[in-house]
Image 1 (cartoon, rainbow, N blue to C red):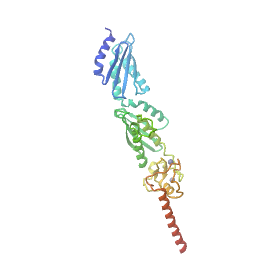
Image 2: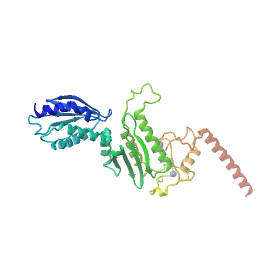
Image 3: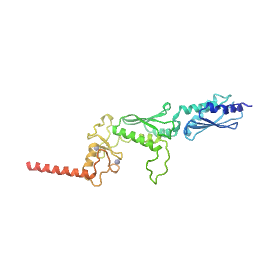
Image 4: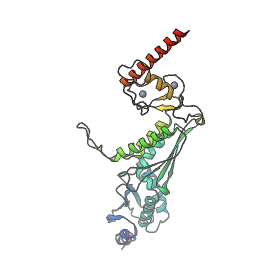
Length: 327
Ligand SMILES: [Zn+2]
Ligand SMILES: [Zn+2]
């Protein structure tokens, strides 16, 4: 029996025992094919072929996976070849399988490698940072704009993408109202990736589960770059002060920033004046996008606002008459 036959006989025996979650799909001189499936998405198939002078030459290695990006598979294949090179003249397959299995364990983010690579392409153009933390299966995202920043920790669960990513704000120097919006909306975006809508509309296409990392990161990057140069369209002034230290934190102050339902920004006083003065016909629309303005602080109907305004005007006229009379 040749060296290869001996190695193959050993592999059939010991692979399922030594390599966790593995299945031997083929184990003949023409081809060895082993599947390693830690979870549905952390799975890989390692194929080996042998030239006539094996093990004096390196086995031909090919890795396949439905959920791991080609780029990562190419890189990993090269590392496997380096590993096999260490065992020239000896059995190589089991050593390479061990190496692959350890890689899957130590790199839990491999199941979102495609998404991470897309995100990194986007980040080249700006000063944002994405740090991978394989040990905790998480990524740290920091979005910078001027002196403002949003720093989030995003955790990839074991059964990702069936389950959505975990989302946690680490640091953020935007006003509280914006911080609440960033977090709530990020969680909502992730939820929609894995849960079908509660009320399905007849024309909606069937629900398809989506990985949630990239949509959430894209949202945070967009938000983090959106506000600094926007102006309050009522007064034409820049809404955000250059230095976050100068943000107005008193909610009833004139310069307190308000974010209306459509996402556009107004000063508290500017919005208040706009809502409470005529014309009232048809309600109030956003200066930037034309959508109807909704805001928790101004819940009155246009009719009530108009009635109040008329009442105030009448009062003022009475007062003016008195002033006239006395002077
Ligand atoms: Zn304003
Ligand atoms: Zn708007």
